[in-house]
Length: 353
Image (cartoon, rainbow, N blue to C red; front, side):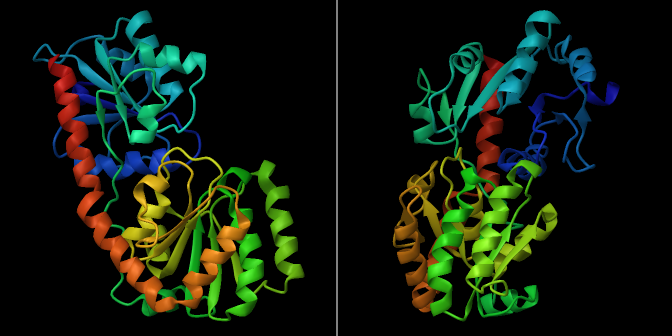
């Protein structure tokens, strides 16, 4: 435990599945640890080079203050993590301050509101997330993208060809294959649009859990009936380190969730030089400049999705310019380094209160 003695920041990691929140945590770690000694509560999906704690170690460490007398900060993003912090603080006497970072774009339950009311500080990741909180957050810190991983391709054609799929234009959608992610909306639109554009290929990348297999199978039947089995590919779950190569090959990245917290995939696509096609769920209509970086459509609207998908494929020169616009916009406004610096500064401020 002595190696943890000077740990100032402990980051919650209670997610059982690899999610957007997990991705955010991992991307931030390498930048945060340069500024502050930290550890992660929970080992799942965390690269071996970062220090992790189990709950017993967390309790043992935090029952004492730091050597300088200050309290450690526990940074949470989920209800489970807020609960862990409150149990540690009020049942085991942990000397911690708890920060909750809220991305939710919906009304919180009474229980969640109660948990939030017990936090020492509240961070919102967007203005929309802030609007669902009972009181103003202490600060708004948008999520950023790791620009060392998600980079603008020197040649979109070469990046696409390296992936080995047919056609000359990749349309990708990334994330868990389930109803809430709206993958069926893109598939339905593609069934109408792809037969008119032989150059386009649809890539669907993400895990399908057992309970979502009927949802996936319905899409597979539609694809087969349309004769597009060689134009639409389900890749399944891909390792974290392989994702940037896939993003670089895409001319268009779609994200059509029916509901969403923050959702990094459009930003990762934009950083990789792809035009985006998103629903207005989450913060995407706040972040994506409609008609400049791509297009934003209404939630659960297949007709609008067909129209904009057709435009993106048909007018490839404009789509290329949109991708370049998007990459520049992300690099100037949404770097993970900037997010990490703002979080560390806020952690320091909370420590000193």
